[in-house]
Image 1: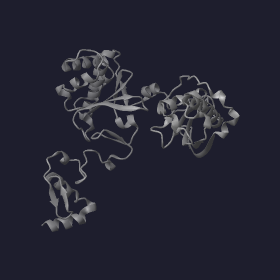
Image 2: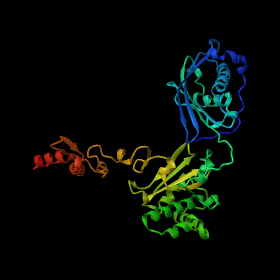
Image 3: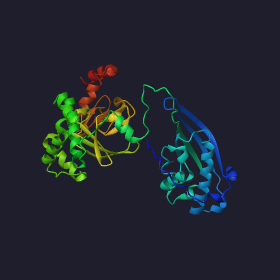
Image 4: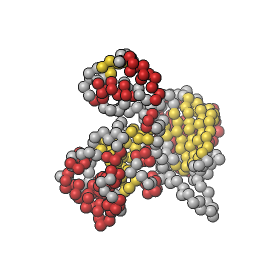
Length: 384
């Protein structure tokens, strides 16, 4: 969730329009409203139609002046019933926009027309001519601020800022060594220890010594990795990641490095064998503000239902319903028959040419499923 509480200066120029007459320049109709009792949040969708005055004539300065007064009036209209400490996000979308115009979650007091204009300029830049007689969908998301009281709930309030989420998240293990020069090595050592614990190569006691940095174990393991990789101690970048993965003891592991915050995440590095369903050999690091942390579960990190390690995608569906890049569309398997040399073999019953003998055998075996027992009997009799 993006949080932005920096005060933005409101752009001047809206004084050319009388706020009492702004209703003549737009039409705002509420079309949908949703409420989440768990987060005490409201989400409202509006249809926004603009009727700009003819004298603006695609003049950038006049368009910004018009939007300054327009957004001031709209904010006053839709935010009338909310408190100043409530978190608010505006998002505008249209068929002619390359990306939605959105502001971060900020307090109502800091939501100004200048804040919205900054978001418009970031998306549209100099292409302001799309704001003619245009139809927009305006989404207003509001998270109500909790009220103070004498009762303290047993359940902790979910944090809104990213630092609190990092501190309270159970899927993140930060490297406890405060030396930035060996931060990457320390995080890599923790991730490997976690993977070895799942594989049964080390016991829980050895893993906790590294995770909790007992006797400076993180620094010791990190310096060992730097020495084996032949990399001088210092901050790491793309040029040094490959050297670490060339260490013989890391050849069987897959390393992912994800950068950003918990709203905008991007995988910036991925190297290693395709671990497939064997998640014990997958190492995941999280890079933010030059500091590396260990991701113990990509499913919890992405807040998804499943994660495919073959095509590196977070999924909101069960893994059994996902067809990844390793999936063969002919035999419906992940045996890697797509990577073998084509030697087509025809199935006389289905009249389908399969890639090779392995692909054909997978097809025949798959028909032994209970749902295909009748078809398998027919195929067996016809082949024989």
